[in-house]
Image (tube, rainbow, N blue to C red):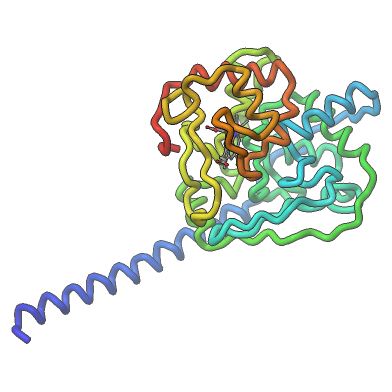
Amino acid sequence: MKPLAKKILVSIGSISGAVIVGGAAFVGLQLRAFAASTDKVYDVPVPHVTRSSDPPVLARGKHIAESLAPCAVSACHGPDLGGGDTVEIGPLGKFTAPNISAGGLGATYSDGELMRLLRHGIKRDGRSVRFMPSHEFNWLSDDDFAAVISYVRSLPPVQKSNGPLEIGVLGKVLDRRDMIPLDIARRIDHGKIELAPPASPTAAYGAFIARECTGCHGKTLSGGPIPGAPPDLPVPLNLTPHASGLNGWSFDDFRHTLTTGTSKSGKKLAAMMPFAAYAKLDDTEMHALWAYLSSLPPRPFGGR
Ligand code: HEC
């Protein structure tokens, strides 16, 4: 081999070696940062909660638990709160919401600790919840959360052990890169939690509800594949008023899609899109969400 060619090969070899070593060091750093952050004990006081057994309060709690803060759906803690379905997302991990009925974790939490978890994403031991999206609905009022807690407490105990919650290396790295939210409490400004204005059919209120769509449809709601997800996972679509999104949809098209799970185009939506929960949004909430989505700047599909 000519000396120059040899020199080039040797330097290519050392460059790729450096890339591998550098890559491993990068991943190692991200994993350590993830572990340190999920080990952190937050100093947030446990609030006081007044539980109620009034039927209107329980009905309000049930409504929220099945729609706005959908704990009681199969993909989350399950309708009986005994634990939900396991969602496997390839290299990101396996996720199962635990049994939070009185037969499970519900028995170990005080009402105040539950309220702190919903508002701040902090568990009983002071550490962050993982995967549980408190940051998407922690704008609900104290009264609404008290109603949810009253409803949760009114359900009978379920004896069922918890399914797996395993976060893969890729899941941890993408969390640290702020591409998917798994380590929740670090994303919440604990000293300054923004609450929604009183419910009204306006974009200002809908902006808060739409936070729940961002986990899948992306921060700008323009859709695109979830980072790190395997190719067979359904791709969240564009919810902005762009030609590749909801341009040309009426409010009735939108409501029909959310309540039936069949899109305007006639397509039956994948079960990953949690329309069972959103089908239960009331008129005010549905109009608010639509007003907000319609007010967004149109963005081409895939910007997330
Ligand atoms: C857990 C992930 C997830 C969440 C959360 C989610 N979606 Fe979706 N959504 C999807 C997926 C995936 C699709 C595409 C399904 C398919 O193509 O079969 C979809 C499709 C849709 C569609 C159909 C669009 C079209 O062009 O046909 C609408 C409308 C929609 N979502 C609205 C919402 C709204 C509004 C929210 C929040 C209140 C929301 N989604 C929250 C995953 C999600």
